[in-house]
Image (cartoon, rainbow, N blue to C red; front, top):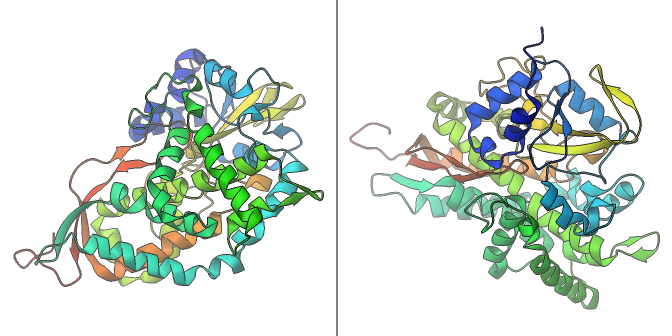
Length: 435
């Protein structure tokens, strides 16, 4: 593919870092397609941010993700302004002065810390969640069905009332966190993951405001750690609280960061895929009808929802040596931003990527990342999606959007604030016809 005209490094960089860009999907896909068409990483210099290489090709994201010796996480994990970085570093060289999660870590720490909770997210352990996921799906389906009238037709904001809470309930149950703290967890996670969205931050210019929830998170989870060390239970909180690295307990920063990772990544990503998947199906009645006829397509449909939404928009890495990526020379110390949303719509990998196809096969989406840092909870996320949509397919005859979706303003962890739908329960009719 021939390269397009040169990219303006400032204007393009400003668009890539702007949270509002990712709330306008047609515009951001146009921008990312233009970057992909350059054929190699593009150097951008946004105002108020350190410069970086924008990596948008699927093959290049996979290559960088696979080489954790050359491209490390600890120096720069995600796009933050210089003000945000100052708040995060607090004068230290390492990124993790405020947080040190699994995704901040390089080897061998990443491998060792990941092993603490990994057994709770392998396929066998996740399958043991089937019963509780089915019960939860029935409970939430009951909430949806309660909105229907005598004719079986009802309206609900699927994102705000179903998708936001379902995965949060799942991860809180696995952690062993009381449901009474559900609103608190929702507020704290959104403050951290979407600090520039006006619905979740009082300071969208975002200096230290990105980390406003950290002290409250820390106090909360330190209490949980103390409790589980006094009285262990059969939950993930106990595993983290009593985890050891090299025979020593997890440090306070690492333990709290572990909990924060589970609370944020454990629900926001699945919530985004659930909500965006519902929007895609509500806008395509033929796809919903086909899924009802061919429920065996549910797994591939869930995979397509994940690709379509790509909840985590990017992660960053820093080059440890002079190297080459996609034909572009990159110097030691320079940062790359791997845009998964761009990679998951790469025309060289996906046939007609702008089409939502419930039967897409193969589907080489990398929304969960790739390589050693691939998402630990991806098996659980897939199971949540298929369990919920199996329940919804059995109870809902048809779907339609009643207004535009509202997308979270975030350049990092995206999601949906509103997906307003009208639904008709199986057997319900309006004047003898479906909605």
